[in-house]
Image (cartoon, rainbow, N blue to C red):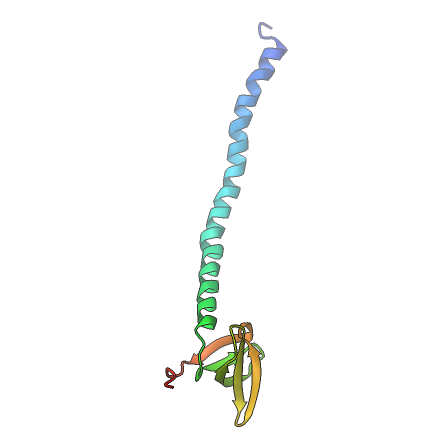
Length: 110
């Protein structure tokens, strides 16, 4: 009776601001948890893989993405390797096609 409708409406948005914050807070917490559980470890794994592929040298035993196991006989350039998959059979493999390095070779003595 003493409070006009206009005055009652101006007090409502102040309480709504806190409600918006409380509704957004769970999404922010979920993002933080996802970052530490998924995004950070995946970035670290990508760095390890990049380092592994960069350090492949002659004599390493590698497994290609197709499951072929072979020994690196020559590093052609930054993106290709020559891999011997059987005696006398050599194939060229793209570095990114290598899925793992099984046995590290000895340093090359030339």
